[in-house]
Every structure is written in structure tokens, then in C-alpha cells.
Amino acid sequence: MTIQQLMQDMQMSRYRLSKISGIPWATLADIYSGKTHLDRCGAGTLFKLSKALGLSIEELLVLKTEPEKRTADGKPNRKMYLETELSGSIQKAIKEYLQGEKEQVLHLDCLWDELYGAINADLWSGLITEEQAGYLREKYLGLGGKEESIHD
Image (cartoon, rainbow, N blue to C red; front, side, top):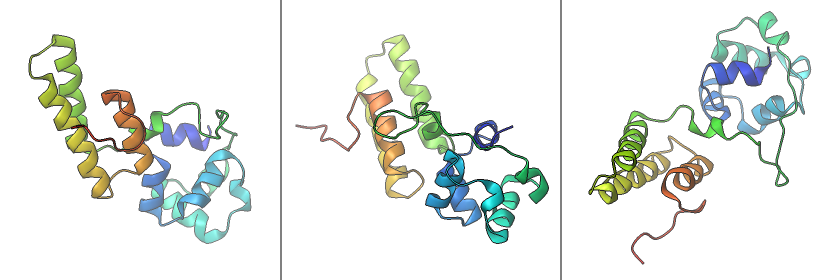
């Protein structure tokens, strides 16, 4: 099993793992991408990582790392990691918005606003990253990566 598969199975983003473990995000990004192998990490990093993932250090060291397939701009091809660890308010807003689109409800603009607000609230609270917020806005609301004015 790879560390990528384990984290995907646990529905844990690198950002969340960084917060839980106390390991800098850049260090985790290097491990996740295969740039740094687990057997080259210090004992402190391995201890924090094993504790956060619920594994022994021995189990952690047998995990493989594999380079992620990336786009030309260096980002991972699969963006599913951006939808892990979302708050209940965003999950609820996404579900209601998608259901509203499916049913072609007359109040879809209200559902759009609810989702937009939930994304922004979690971004401002530090629950999601700017990258996650941009991804969610683009995927569900058709907005570009950065926050756009909705009342122009």
C-alpha cells in the first residue's frame, strides 16, 4: 500500500494531516510526492506521522511512496484530495445545491448563495485552504479559482 492510498482510504488531506500531526505541510508534500522517502525522515517526524495515521513506525516504514501524476503546472491530476475533511456545513450545502440543480428548483440562486457562503466561512475560519475554496467554487459554482464578485 502507498501512503497516498492510505490517506485516500482515510479521506485525509495533506493539509489535515499536517494540522493533526504538527508536521509542516511542505515536509508532508515531499513525502507524499515521493521526493522524500519515509526511511530518510527523522525519528520525530516518523513518530508524529505514525501517531496521526494510527500506525506503528514499522507499519509506516513499509508504506511505499510513488510520484504523483501531475499536470503541466505541477498540480496533481486527481483533485479529490481537495474534497476531503470538509465541514458538515459545506457538505450539506453541496448536497442541497446538487439536489436543487437536479430538481430544477426555483430557489437555486439561494442554494448557490448558501454554498458560496459556506465555502467562504470555512476559508475565513481556516478550516479549508485557499486552494480547496477555489476548487469548490470552480467545480460547483462555475467560478474561477479566486473569489469573484457575485454582484457586479
